Image 1 (cartoon, rainbow, N blue to C red):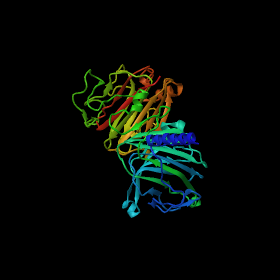
Image 2 (tube, rainbow, N blue to C red):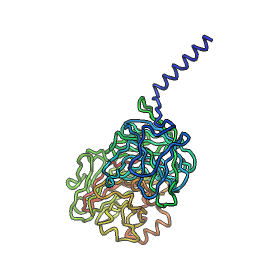
Image 3 (spheres, rainbow, N blue to C red):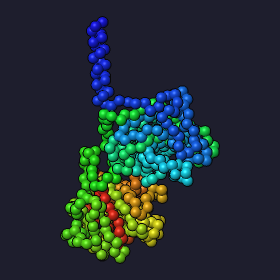
Length: 455
């Protein structure tokens, strides 16, 4: 008996030690009532039934949130969430914010939201900046995670908000990795989304087993590499470094860049200030005032990411596979990710079928994008170009894939044959080339230019 007592005592000590080391879980929902929570912003209802919070949709009201009365900074949150109908989009607010005067006094919830998306789009676990900047981590950035969420079943969400890093899991599947300095503290909230049809009134979203850790936090590493979205200027996360990402712009100097037409970096026009690389406005001409700049290094298969900010009516471009071998009078020749203010620059209406609009493969393939995924001039957008070793190429805008093609394919060559590039033999098919930022006479800024070589 004594030995059994000692054994149980030692086991308890070990258990308590592990709990202290790994952080204590605190239940945010007592399973009986909504103590510690309050509903805001909309008119959807929340009630407790058999240990489950049921959120019920109401037609004719905006998004409704059940939020914690307490605010949280760094934490690890786990929640079970179930959606039983396609109309019942939902989400979990993370460090959420509230403006009581917003929406004409109805109140406005804004901030980081981890998505629950039962639609065929399947962006559950992605990160959306509710009522503020929009999507930052659509699941086009991690398509293998689209199958994690199960409609009509309980889904276990894990959310880590530690420092400036937000990571998400669904049912054990790594989903999103986002780094941002906007909010460091706020409430935790459960969303019942607005509905578009009165036929969907009464649809329910369910939540249970809501618990949080706030001390001795032990973040889980992702088992597989995922794309990291970061708004922090010109810094790589440890995760990115481990994957082989490198900065093409260090935020302080022109190291790694030079003029496309001269050996040195341009003496005027291109400025570096507060970690931002900017081509200044001139006369709107193509590469004739200050000139394009190119990387000193060449790349073949790669993943290239960059943030850009347009001034109103601006035109620029990020080109790849630039060889500088073509004899061109304007900008150096290369495949171009178009940078353009579609609303105000005339180039958006030129070309063929919109193939000169923002994020398009210039003069070849139109970017298929929705206006709600495009941020306005004066705001930062995130571009991405992925060139796989098999010559498949993808363009992304703010995390959404907007086009894909295969370099050197017959379909690609057919497009070149009816474009301005027909005069150059095997245009865009070089085995390697430089990255170029274009001077088109308008002010455009860049930051967070990073690249990973693909094998």
